Image (cartoon, rainbow, N blue to C red):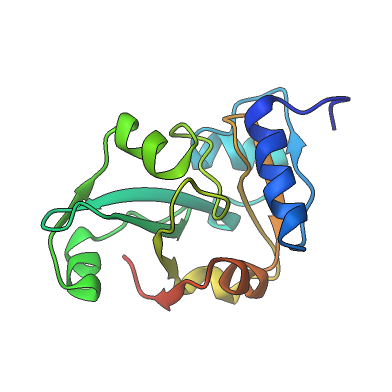
Length: 159
């Protein structure tokens, strides 16, 4: 781990610590912006990457976060059925406003506003997973049970 964390990674580590949640932020020299990049940099399978994807609900404009296994493409129609309204992938400005983080570094918690969260049920079948931690170079390791607990998310099929 680097001597000092980048501002986004430090902000997330502080949020994690304040919640008493497990995990220590690690910044890597290689990018972790995509699931494949993250898995390569960490040395884990792509399926162990818990990618945070932000959608914008069409009617209400509220943010919806889907935390999916890195090997899956989220089925937007399933998300629409789960929340009862149409969704579309959020643009980078919306993501930053809603979460406080840039695309590629959005962590599962510590957002600028509360976010409805749906967790890929396939992540719960793993022993350990890795999630973004506030920057495109920062990650942290956690258990699927901890992810569910810290986010308050609903575990559902998302692909």
